[in-house]
Length: 218
Image 1 (tube, rainbow, N blue to C red):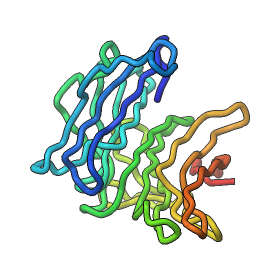
Image 2: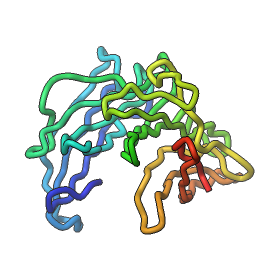
Image 3: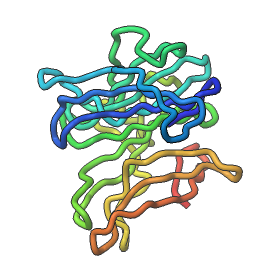
């Protein structure tokens, strides 16, 4: 959910687990309150004949005021489409690839601008397996919202690159499907994870940035 130009904007997806017959829709509200939402309809869909999966949408507005929607899960990876700010719908038919693992597990993109960089956060590996989940949070960055995004070692994320930000440790299993939010004292990383007994929990950590500008959990 985003708040832009005096309205709340919600991009949401519909699918079934493990299928790329999926779609992303838009709803808007003047207040964000229950009962105030208007469905604005389809933004993008994927069919079983497509090489991408239209779920996990995330809106980013670049320094030029252009709107973009990052999305994607498994298949050929993370995609980016440009939106018309007036409608919240697609402004053209171009679908850009910004990250992928050659069909391997990658999903839940979030793009945020900090300083000179656009940071792309994604989740690698597998969620939804309780304490056996291997989900982990990965990041890359680019000077352009459209990429190419590279990791700390310069490997492009379209070729499987990515710098690990947070993985399972101790009694925290499978942290992922992250969001990054600005707070009064810095950025906050929000995610879900599993406890030892398989209970699903919410994780909240502060983010710091090292001397080279890479995010790290504190």
